Length: 405
Image (cartoon, rainbow, N blue to C red; front, side, top):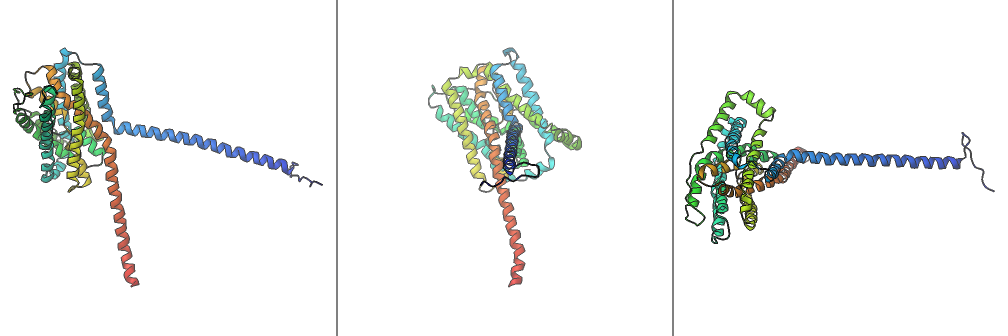
């Protein structure tokens, strides 16, 4: 005989009640699972958005340069207006870059870092002698066959190796990489101070070799304007320190220098596209310049990195690896307009091609390397923190051991 079915206080059988409880539990389990899935989906979207937002803010300079190059490849300033554009960009943007740099540099920080004469000598020798010698060696090897490379490109490669390091991008990327920003500022400023004097001398020395690609290049040894503008900026900073700090630090007006650098790079590509410099050069020459630029950047970076880690801290090493391989279009491009007189626009653009290509490569590589450099710095901080904790633990256990003994 089957056992009687028990009834619940509400009159339902225990079997029905059990089935309903199981069904309710199933529904309860199902709903939180859906809600959790939805929450995970939202969380994933938020993480993607945060990552995209971080990348856009972190790499805005690279993206702006890329956008400027794309615009210059599609729309160019008319040839009749090229001279006016060059005049405005050369004088206005370069003046703003030097003025902003002078206003944002701390005089005390400059004086403190200027005392590191060994690092100055180490960096500037590589910036001018190492880079120019390697560039001249590659040009000499390419010049053995006059039918291989365009003469304007060869002169441009030599010019690229002789110009000083950048200012705006170096400082920005060193800060993003958690390197020694003050040292970068000093080295960049010192390099650009020496540039108007050393670059014409080096260029004259290399182009006076009598090779087939060299011609009589009248040189103008001017270039004191950048020094004057930076001096004006330092004067303004010291006369009005609070106002300068508010304008350039709190209001983040120091990004104006980076924006001006984007304009300078756009102007160089605009002239190259407008004059047909890219199309007038053989495709194999363009490919060769791109690969040589990548190889030179990697070679400069490897030499200065391995030479720096032997005796410098990681923060100082990051500063050096941003200063040595970088070449500034803010001075290199105006130098082609002031040092080389009587050249046609297309020849002038050809001379600038290696520099603008190299600039794009160094900006892209430098921006991407900030992530690796940050991890390198953070790993050192974590190791130092662990060592400090171990030393603290050893110091605290030493009295207990002595008491136990």
